[in-house]
Image (tube, rainbow, N blue to C red; front, side, top):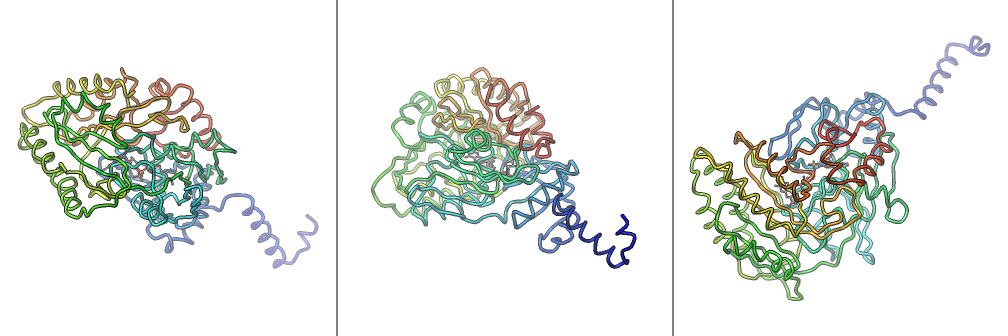
Length: 484
Ligand SMILES: Cc1cc2nc3c(=O)[nH]c(=O)nc-3n(C[C@H](O)[C@H](O)[C@H](O)COP(=O)(O)OP(=O)(O)OC[C@H]3O[C@@H](n4cnc5c(N)ncnc54)[C@H](O)[C@@H]3O)c2cc1C
């Protein structure tokens, strides 16, 4: 104290500066500095509306950040944690629910798109969180590698996809099941390096974590050598396809079934691995692009409004056009027929995974559900997609934990008055079969249902969540509904 009094003003200033530096070194950088400093470099920084892909979910975050370095994100997290502000990380917004909504901070991850490491011997690839799946597929192909499974489109970010358990239809699990390592930043700004050997329990929680554990910086994926598939699509009688679903599944390496529950026809997609070279598929790709991503969507909207009653004819005709004789290509091109679909306003999807043996009864129940929603004014048009996956027990919140599953997905438009009730009924009916809803699609889950459907796994996940994020800054209304 005495020393201080004797100090000249400039020395006192020096001491204040030293103290400030010491305090800053031990506490998080205050956000206003971060924002002001990076205002121009971070690009946009303003109040705005944050929407999902189809505009069915909207929120008004106080800030949307576009960081370019992991340090930016650590600063944002630390500031939010000190000030109890909710932080949600956004991939490409391809989730059909309020997962990324918040009135706090939304952190865009687009700038994080590098391949960080390729281990060719182990077929493992480490990438940054914001890389889009189609970029990942291309990068893997260049390395002579491929993912063992893929979803229907390839537009989502890597971290976004794995955080909700994005899956395809194969004799393996979802993409999340192929994660062998992750780097994740918790609410204190601490980096956790997760591996199967050293932190299996945390990795099991982080593989599907709904953004609720923290910022996933990187993901290491177990891939396999690139492979070619022979693919054919066959239009057939819906009842026949449903009766023989197990044969289609067992006789193919990948297979799924597309239909409308109230029409007579189905389109069955079959894929088998082959040693033969790819064929030239230019015309098929063009046809797919036009029919899948444009005609089907436009028709769904138009007919649902103005031409209810044409569903059966429409699907029958479309499936004829989409039928294809055997042709070959690399897996990454065929398994995701739509790379980057244009957003379709009001388009919604709910999807539920049931034990595979319950598939026929579940489809019958879905048909009965549609009957009760029949109306002369509109039609719940949209595709029913049936897919399959093997059990895998390395992700606590996986729909395929402890069971082989069939996924039933129903798409429609949110403009129909009873749509919310429709998906609520769908979930309720599937609950009888133990149906676990897709985390990224329309669902009406709550804590009781999560506990009922995931049992001990929900408890374990929540324990990790509370360790990583004791104050719950990585939660929003949607997440709070799911966990205590
Ligand atoms: C047209 C369409 C087709 C689809 N097809 C399929 C399909 O075939 N199979 C399937 O299973 N699903 C499918 N989906 C659903 C989609 O794959 C999932 O909802 C996926 O999570 C979306 O990824 P995203 O990058 O858009 O993530 P977002 O929707 O932006 O976010 C999803 C979750 O990931 C979290 N997140 C994102 N990045 C990070 C990060 N870096 N760190 C921590 N958390 C993060 C978010 O907070 C959020 O909780 C489809 C969706 C659409 C719109």
